[in-house]
Length: 219
Image 1 (cartoon, helix red, strand yellow):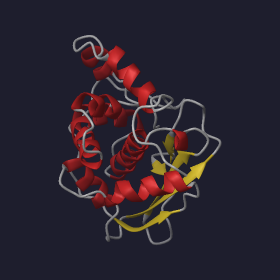
Image 2 (cartoon, rainbow, N blue to C red):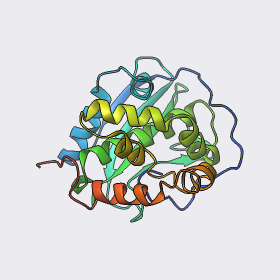
Image 3 (cartoon, rainbow, N blue to C red):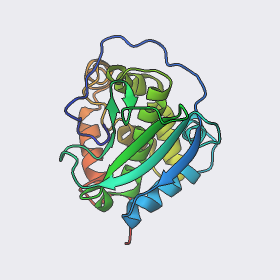
Image 4 (tube, helix red, strand yellow):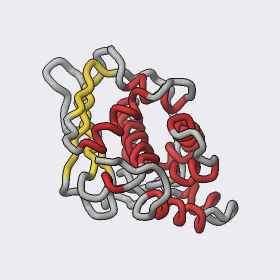
């Protein structure tokens, strides 16, 4: 579901109810990422100073309650247009609750292309997938999640990126945060048509991924 490509089973709805504000925390978080660049970015994104809503939201997911267990892994078998994926089966990530009733969530990060992209881009993918985990935990259907993100969380995600990467422009932060959301009704009807951001969006996504813009991992 991550990246500026859209996973084959991603769907969009024309109407989305207001986001649930239920607090969600986890008992454990496991970083099973083996690629050094991706592992470092998972740690940096989680540890970023919490002074804005999106990072507060991500931090709440990685908390100390008994609601769910979350793990990050890196894989090499995601479709070529997918940078990250939060697997959802029958409304439950990873298909089931464990023996103690906790929701088990696994976020998969692409380890074939993503490590060569900018740190700003990678951090956005991690935030995007963390939001999928959060929205699933509070009961937002898979079909509603991208539209909910673009309506309620893009601004906060952009602010989080600017906090992690001082000097990142608001325009670049916002266009990065729109990654993976370009097939939603709001993007197509409001952002692409009314705000005329499509060209800037595409250029920003390319510059921070396959281009040379942004910070790159050294390992």
